Amino acid sequence: MTAPQGLDVGALDDLLALILRVPDRHRRFEVDAATAAARYEIDEPTTAFLAAAGLPSTSGPDGSRFDATDLRNVAVHLFARSRERRVLAWWIRELERPAAVTRYRMDYVARCPEPGHAGPCRYRLAVPEDDWHETGAVPQDGAVLHSVTFDRPRRWPELPAALLGLLDETRHIRFLWLPETLRADASFVRATGVGDCVGVAHLLVEEARRRGLAARFSHGRSLTPPISASHSWAEFHLDGVWVPVDPVLVDALRHWGIAGPGWQRTSSLGTVLGRVGARRRDLVTHAGQPVAAKFPTYVETGD
Image 1 (cartoon, helix red, strand yellow):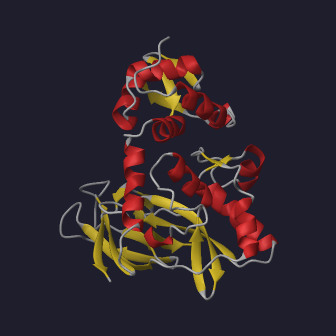
Image 2 (cartoon, one colour; image 1 turned 90 degrees about the vertical axis):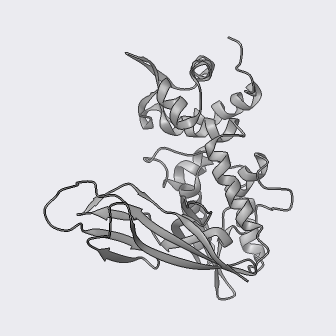
C-alpha cells in the first residue's frame, strides 16, 4: 500500500514503536474512520494505511475502529498542521511575549445539560488553590459562570544541580498521550519510557521527594488565548517560588519544530500555566455531575 502524500513513513514507524508499548487492554476501539476524519483531521485513506502499518484497530460493522488516544498521538506526532500542533504553537507564542509579567483571565463557560429541569442550575466550579466556587442561575444559557485571573512572571530561579541531575534522567522518556487508565501511573512511565504530562509529573515529584527536594504535583490550564487546555506538571520550590518544569513536553515541542533552539528542556513553561490545584478534578459540575465546558482565555495586561 502506498503511503499517503505527506506522511513520513519513518516517523510513523518510530511512533508505532511507542504506541505498541501500551497494552491493548487499555484501549477502547470506539472511533470509526469518519469520526477520525472529523475529529483528528485524519482522512480515510490515511487511517486505512495506518491500520495496515500496524496501528491497533478492530473491525466493526462500518469498517475499522480505532482508539481515540492513539489517533490523538498520530495527529500530534505526524501532522504539522494538525489541530493538536496548532494549539501547542500558541504556547510558544505566549511564552515569547516580551512583558515581564502578564495577567491572564480565564472564563468558565457551560451550558445547562438538562434544560427545563426544576429549580435553578447548581454549578460547582474548581478554582485556584484547590477551592470551589458555586453559582446558580446565569443570565443566559452558555454565559460566563465565573472568571479567574493569573499573574504570570517571565523569569524563574535557576535550577540547582540536584534538580538538573533529576531532569537529565528523563531524557529517554518520549512524550505519548496515554489512556486514562495509565496516565497517572509513574511506574508505567519508568518501565516503558513513554508518558504524557500527568505521569511524567508524578514521576518527577516522586523522584524529587525521594532526593529531599521540595516538589508538588500541579493541575490546571494552559493560558493560551483564545482558549486554555487541561495540563498537569511538576513544580519545585526554589528561592521561595514554585517553579514549573516539564522537560518531556519541551523535548517534544523542540522535536516537532514548535519550540526553537533557544528553548532547553530545563526551561520553565510556567509563564503560561495556571494552577488550579494539587490534583486532577472536574472543573465544572452541574447538580454534582461533570459537564462539558469551555475556558476562553484572554490577556488582560502585560508589563
